[in-house]
Length: 227
Image (cartoon, rainbow, N blue to C red; front, side, top):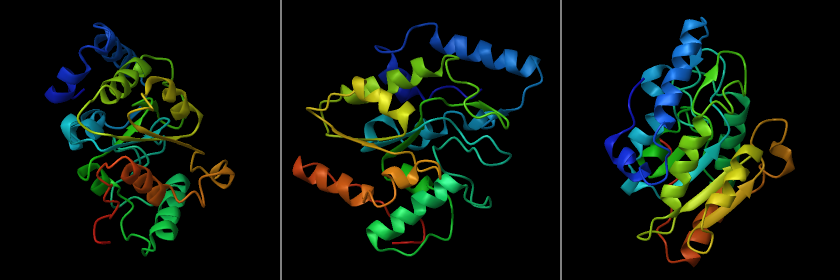
């Protein structure tokens, strides 16, 4: 498994229990020994943290766990590789993106451009068994992602936006200093819940409006090839 990027390892040190990463490695080794297929591929597990360095985070887009079907999970919450059709949750995200920002639907389903613009595309759990959604919950990842949220919330140099999508993500609100940072809780974009508050939420413009009210830098939501 690719290691945590050095900047994140340093940032998480005060918040992450010392055995947590070793426990995750041991758990994934047991999954391998049991013949379980795990997504995303090992080199992509920490891709969100690699693409968005700690010092460059402007917003956190927090979901639940990775996609569980073949070829979808790429280490970025809700995103898929360029050559993979957008799953339903991602289609709803792109639909809201287009509606809210008045942009055409992006040609690519990848959200990697957001990661490069300072949006940490994070899930509360970073791995999943193939075709078994939620299968790696309570297996140790929550300690890591709690530490990520705590470390970012502790920053004094910048007001961040924390966008919490769905119940698993909303549970992290308790870790965030909402006197310093913007916290937006919203329904998950899956077809089961998107019509209960995600679609029509104007999440993108609302985030930038709330950041502006705190004199913070807005997010560049433009996706590749769609400026």
